[in-house]
Amino acid sequence: MASIPVWLREKMFLKRVIHEELGKIELYDRHRLHMLFPEHHLSHAASAFFPSRFKEAAILTIDGVGEWATSTIGFGRDHTIEIHKELHFPHSVGLLYSAFTYYLGFVVNSGEYKLMGLAPYGNPEGAATRKYIALIREHIVDIKEDGSIWLNQDYFNYATGLRMTREEKWQQLFGFPVRKPESPLEQHHCDLGYAIQAVTEEIVLKMAEEAQRLTGARNLCMAGGVALNCVANGKIIKKRLFDDIFIQPAAGDAGGALGAALAAHHIYFGQERNPAPTMDAMQGAFLGPEYSAIDIELMARKNKAVYHKYTSFTQLVDEVADLLASGQVVGWMQGRMEFGPRALGNRSILGDARNPEMQKKLNLKIKYRESFRPFAPSVLDEDNTSFFELDMPSPYMLLIADVVSSRRRPLPDHYHDLPLWERLYHQRSDVPAITHLDFSARIQTVHRETNEPYWTLLRRFKEKTGYGLLVNTSFNVRGEPIICTPVDAYKCFMRTEMDYLVIGDYLFVKTEQPNYQDTENWKETFKLD
Image 1 (cartoon, rainbow, N blue to C red):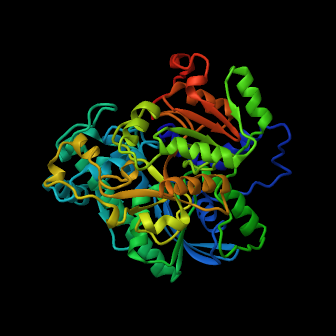
Image 2 (tube, helix red, strand yellow):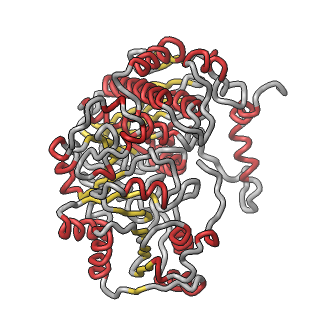
Image 3 (cartoon, rainbow, N blue to C red):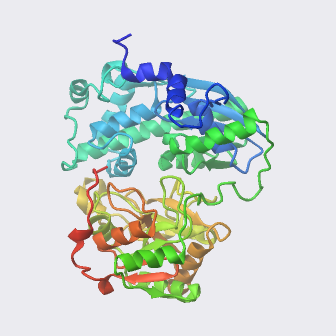
């Protein structure tokens, strides 16, 4: 028993561990209270299907690992969910992607989105990229027609050790050592990133096809950490396998808490669902705390902050739209905080997508993060198709689509042979700050019904500029969580080169703040992600 890995012992006795931890709560009586235990992937499935607009749907959950399942295909109807098929540990799409995340120098369980952002820097037609794809398929993962996979454990160490990979075998296979975090990125890193992203998309697409075949459903719900891979999600949309798709905005393990509660409510207690035909039950995913004018003014008084209070939100929005149109960067905090990893207009840093310098400014002077990382647009839902090749809503920033061809600018000859940083700053469209190297963008459509303040700002910006979209990135710097409170917002504002801050009806101007140039006083140390 002592030789069994710690994680395995925990899994074998998980319910007992939960009872023991709950036992530390004074009012918990394990003999009187009955503990419901929806399994990990059932919780993911419930988090995706029950808040959706669909009366019935195929359900696809994909992540690293739950108890033993790593992916499931299910079917939801009314208040029930049936799991039809499972893939089991150690064979896992999520762990495969995380292994490449580690090998390419990013942090497992937080750096996977960086790998997704790095992939378009790879040369899709290059000999090295094609070789890497072939090596992955030949030596590391065997992909079946139904989307199930077999991982060659000779290359992995996560089942028995403390590291993701057997580094010497990876170096022998791919020809270069594991990249050290923060070391320079080279073209072979980008090409390998493209290769594993392409392989992952192939697997996810086959799983979606199998879900459609098994269930015959016209709608799809998704959850699990791999459902945050927006590029793979976009490929499912392009394939037209389903009429509609809903992805739980908190698709990772955080959403499992919501899913467990929903599973108990509907499956165990048999409570009926009444899905609305036009809006999912997440209603924008604004489930977090909000703060009053008193909270804002107390924060300002404590920090001796100077502010302008607006009695008319219309006037405030008009001022902010002018600031954004002039190239300023604005921190925007309104209402309840978002639930999930994406900032959706209530805890956001905003900029003008038309500005060719905006990506560089946001990455280097405000977010303090790697310069290759792209930014996402928030676009008025009614203007979505004027900018992007996407004919469905994407309210949770979980779908990727290409910028429409009429807005693109021609690429120079031998574009993929240019140095990495020259490609990065080439202006690819009339909204360059949100157009990635492959002309793609991770889209958030903004709807008046779910976020009228943010929709109003976008609408006013469009009236002034003709463009109903903005750069929207999460209100934090690298390594920090997204801000929650007015105190968080002001500290982040003061430690970066953000120009303006809006909290509710209050506008803070950087140059009016006491000691605004002394950013070191506001800095806190967070471990880099």
